[in-house]
Length: 205
Image 1 (cartoon, rainbow, N blue to C red):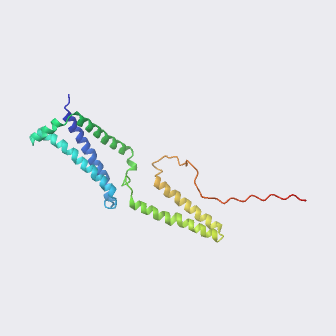
Image 2: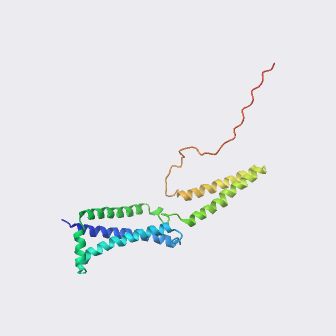
Image 3: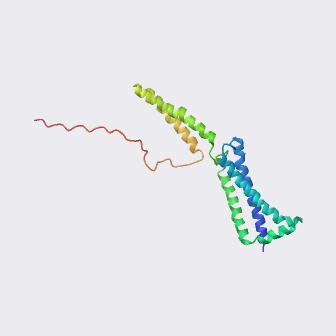
């Protein structure tokens, strides 16, 4: 029968590798996009995975030390303390790490760059683009309607609609998703002025 410490050694090594690669997978895109300082959530998450990788790696190193004749007393003490409850928890942790990387391979096209976290520069660029194309187009359309120029208003609205559709497509990533765009409820366009009903005709005396 395999000793529990051997299971713990193998699983802690798997966890160390998985967590170390996760931290690298987060740090590298943030570094390339110059977001290590502007995206503290991403940096902190990478630091958490890195510290966990070091922690589990230290367990593996301590259990391996007696094999190389290094600090055998501490190594044997850890092997003895590593019973099956700890080994089973390590098995679960290793399976989660492997599961994560299997999912990451499946959704690799969605996880390029720093897309696990909010891209602040991209958000700012999208806000500017919304202002420059959609909002300004609607302002032009309103001014054209006020000046009784329906052709110009129609052209400005078409441009705004096309720009908004393109930006929304980029935000949703339609090349990666096959989503149902049908709303669960009709859009609320605010109060609409209703046409008053014609007054009933008075009977002719």
